[in-house]
Every structure is written in C-alpha cells, then in structure tokens.
Image (cartoon, rainbow, N blue to C red):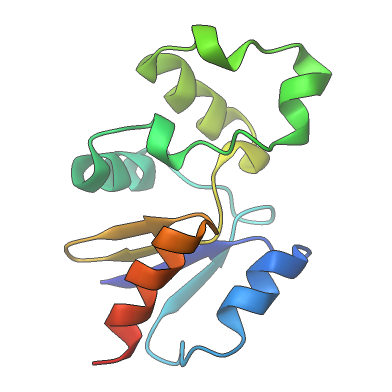
Length: 116
C-alpha cells in the first residue's frame, strides 16, 4: 500500500510532494474526501498514537477553544475524524510505516523510501 493524504490548497504539501515520484501512490485530498475511521485505525496500528497524527497547528484549535494539553488519545481520534484540518499533513502511508507532517526529521525519514 502506498497512500498520501494531503490538502491541495496547502503550499507546504505542494512543496513536499512536488519533487517526489508519486506515480505509484494513491493520492487522497482530505478536504474533498475526508479520512475514514478505518483509514485512521490503520495509521494508528502503525504509529500507536493518534496524537502523532494530530496537527497542533490546526486553526480549529483556537476557533474551538481547545486545550491541547488536556486531550487524551480518544479526543485526538475524535477531532481528526471531525475535521480534516486536525490531521497532520501530508501523511504518507506504506505497508509498514506512516510519515505524518512536515517536521525535518519526518521528511528525512520519508526521503529514504523514495531513494530505493
């Protein structure tokens, strides 16, 4: 399996994805096709953490007055399923791994699967 969950209006997603050969990847735009609970569970099985998949930069946090430090795993799951902006992006999912977000370490790890 090779899937990418991304937001087409996000410049950072475009910047990360544009140099990569994604011809063998299923691309999924999460605003028009929100992530399903089954897909989120699949990611969780690989990461063992909903928080690792949660975007703490979502504009919805401020709009909803969410105290992120008080959230539990079930809260992260519920929020990700509730609104697309709570999912870190882009998310690259393979049979064995999940690479979520745009932090430097994640992008370094992601680059290793494209070097093969």
